Image (cartoon, rainbow, N blue to C red; front, side):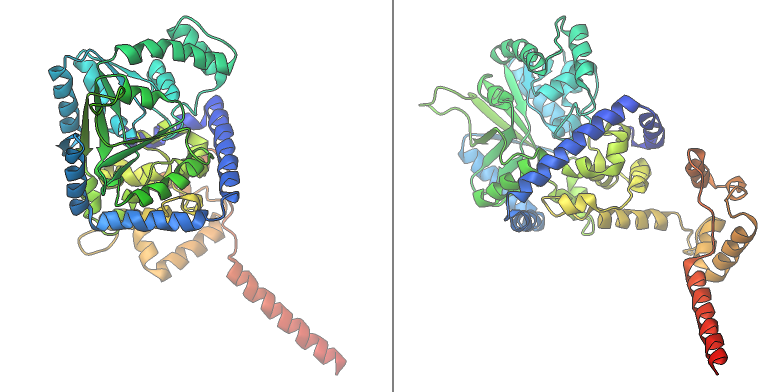
Length: 475
């Protein structure tokens, strides 16, 4: 986790023209597709409201729903494991791998897997873990983390991938379809040879004990049916009460994430292979992972964060994300949802700069299919950061905070700046003026001009004088 390095990572990203071009191009394409998908779907807003209501209901009754979900999974022949944190989740998977003498794992796309570091844990145990989603496969070959929730390689151009395949796979092409076929040939053998398949889970249905997993490439179908052992990693917040609630999420998830009416593959998994079935894993395990989600659940002001369905549209729409890409955020989750999850799962000191980076333009909240109000939650975190910076008596520790708390000091200071330093050159020399200096490093600061309220009052006075003068002349 490198969220503390956000400023340095962001500065470096801003200078990478190729990165910005790739991310901006892809983001606008996703935005246009998403807009078209919802324009053609009039009930979209109504369905979003139902999704938000269902997720809010889950947050109010999560312990009971988790118990119901566990009971139904067990009835379906699934083995359920509970993991309090990332290490425990990885240990559960490693124990299963050891028990089944697993040497090779094929892995479907899973942000939770990235969050807990399952690939690193498997590698440390001498087990080969191969990402099978094309985007994840690309970033794994490059030795990088995903830079977007739904588009892991959004920061890569076709030329980048052409060069990467030539270097890592020994064959390449200038044609996108042929590049995909190269990856397919490499992965096909792995599906047939792997002893374990690991996936995430987009939705868990409490009423039926069913996992719902969406994808566009068929690799998750292969990961859950070819190996004899399937392990699904699922965050405890991914539950919904009923199949109808799951259907509502499916109606907006693909539209918000990729601009599709529906993902190419939607799998409903309720258990391992039945006696009369020819396909499917012989054993199915579900690992329910907390990893600080209970901490967020216990915070009534921030609980709304857990409504996220991981569509990635908030990052796609975010001007900050478009200017930096995902890696600058220094963690698995980027964009507005990353700026909320990092400080709530960990702490404000660890990820405070992510909170400060938000412009609060509201584009994320306008498009969120779960109706999360990101700007409101960002403001709550900023207020908490401000409260932490105060002394025991509630007075800000620095002189600038003191001025902001006393209007007459503030007005006097503003008057002096306008009078003697309208271009804010001297202000940048003041102690603790790092923020102003950083702002002025790459751009010319605006002049501190006369406020509009004073200009307006002056205009009104002049207007009255002119009217009075005209009246006197008429007399």
